[in-house]
Image 1 (cartoon, rainbow, N blue to C red):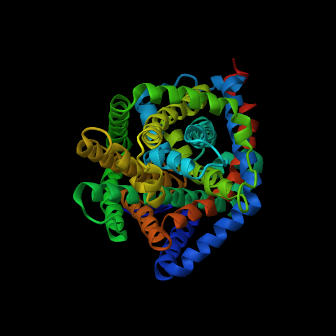
Image 2 (cartoon, rainbow, N blue to C red):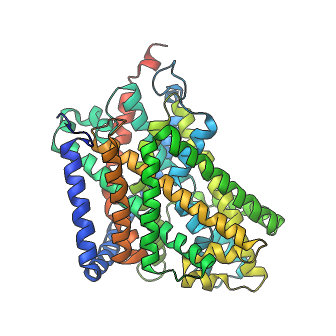
Image 3 (cartoon, rainbow, N blue to C red):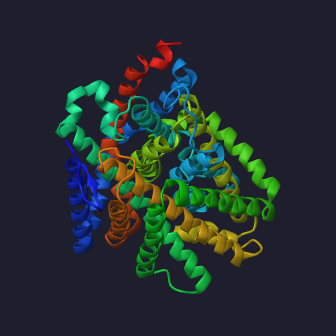
Length: 504
């Protein structure tokens, strides 16, 4: 079907119109009926976690090992775009962009919050402070480690391959044509792309909501203002405006430079905490936590024990993370595909899995480890502070180190740049999907989707806060996990017939 084109829009109507209408309807209902929406989100989240947790656990392990197989198989030598094509971006910029988009605000928000919350409510009872610290870091590594990037990298490889090697539009349905053929040009194909758009929007809204809460807490710490819902809404609105200006400047200008700035700010904070904190303690903790993560990898990867009432730990942590990451995968996968022309499948698989995972572990080990050090060795009850307000964790940890005003300001800027790059790259990705896979949508379309992302985040904060944000990810993550499974089968079927292998 041909696109509907105007000066400001170039849309695939079967994808754009349902996606826009569902989004606008959701935002309106959530804001108008906030109390009912909050109850509905809670019931839905509990039901999905209870009934389908087993499937998500199997799925995330399958995705990871499928990507590892691609990296070390004969298919790893296949180059995106053709055997003579060279990359569009330097390796540093490439890694910076995929990392900034893929981890984003969650890496800042949960750097202190997650280890401290695990410390406060460990999965095992009767542990000493040191034992709780080890367990907290092991589970933090697990939630931000290789499984996350297995999800992203799988879809990134599939989209890149079908777009640049098979000359298909940059859309999810294009990756399924080897399996389902002409059916992808009908209602089923458009429905898959609509699900991908909604997954991207709700996954991003979850991230932007967390970012707004932490950004507001940082502003509150620095200025003395109360971190209210109004300040959070104002934060989303202001940063969405900046992100809109960035997305209008294009991939090679605003987003590339912001991603590089992101990495620089993150490294400055990382090395400051490492130097100002108990360096040896933090490095020892990194080595030990990495060892525990690797040693217990298979056990924690399949853990579903009904700990507490109705398996509360699994639902609150692993279950939420897996569906959040899956709901992010259309966004991150499409973005990885867009920037990976000229890379081999092996490059994307190995760099995509290893580099961001190890950096995430380093980051969590230093910032989370510094918080645990303060908790265990100084008497500061940081765990209680985080339990009361998880968005304050990073700032209260930094407050115990020198130059607090400087580092707190740096952290606020870091949250803001992660916020902007996530919204910016997310808008570009939704543009691709709602324009039938075209790589350069009109400016009006970019502005529309950037505003929609901010609107959903505001609606979710009004209609239930962080719990509503988590429920939104679950609603789209489950169906997309099924789609991802079929994407992997379709990719493998096509790779077996690839020209770069058959004409060697």
